[in-house]
Length: 230
Image (cartoon, rainbow, N blue to C red):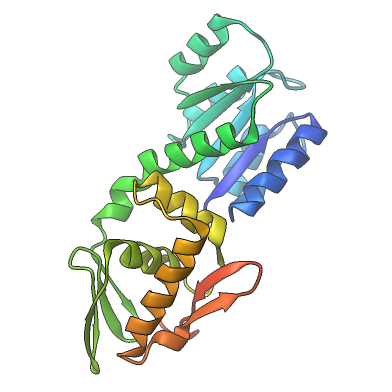
């Protein structure tokens, strides 16, 4: 799971954003001491930072400079000030995006997802196959093979399986699966997702793997893996 550091002193807003991010299975970290933001950043080592411009002690620009002197982690600025200069300064300091307050939560989530895909997509796309339950999953060929045989999956089925096995033994929500499929131009509705998962599971049953895609009622799906498996 991606770790997001949310540097926001408005605790009401912080709690609201945190709840939304947790719904998308992100790990969310706040700041305990606004005079030690860099130290806490170093300890947390987040995958992405969301930072407000107006903060106690020092403003967000200061902490952006400090973080940039140590890391190229993606940074998204929040601002309640309607000053074009804020956006210009943010970009000059190396921010990846800028969100004007007040904002719709879906907009912030979309920007976070887009930034994470853009920054980390290179590494994830280079992975062409995985070993799962002693089966070889080839993302490019859309196949899963083990001693019992080889099955071919549709692109949507492979996309779903890939998301599940990349986070094996963790629940992936239905909402996250649908949103990710939609973002990748393979739109599926709630009912279509159910159909795709059922077809995926049925195909996996042909090589003895169907039972390892578990449905977590009211939560989502999970691909299980033995604890000692690599």
